[in-house]
Image (cartoon, rainbow, N blue to C red):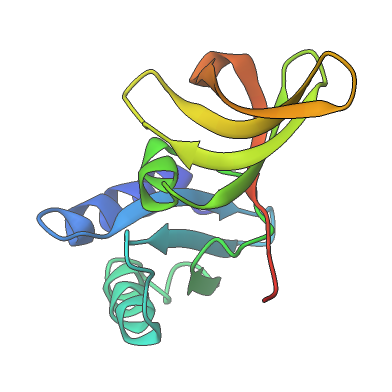
Length: 150
């Protein structure tokens, strides 16, 4: 089986000094390698192809058979690295906290330790008020983009 750490090293070597960031590396028992990368502006197909080529050149097909896929994480995947929060600041997200409570709102004020969620909350009866809810990263179970069609 291909060493996941080796793939991460190859990716980090390639992205050093660029705006690319690594989201995840997965290696299955059958050597299917999935690399998820992105940029704050969104990764292009050409950037994925160049990263793919770099990883493939760093591996030896004569000693191991593998399948390699390089792509963006996609909108349906939960955030897994802090760069995704910065990238999506100002976007509508859904948050599930560690207690299982769900919140939806606008991602704001991302820092090293957490973020604020601008959301509507009920106050006394039927009135609603816009409020910023602070979250530390260790308080959240999942965070995902909410797709809105206009």
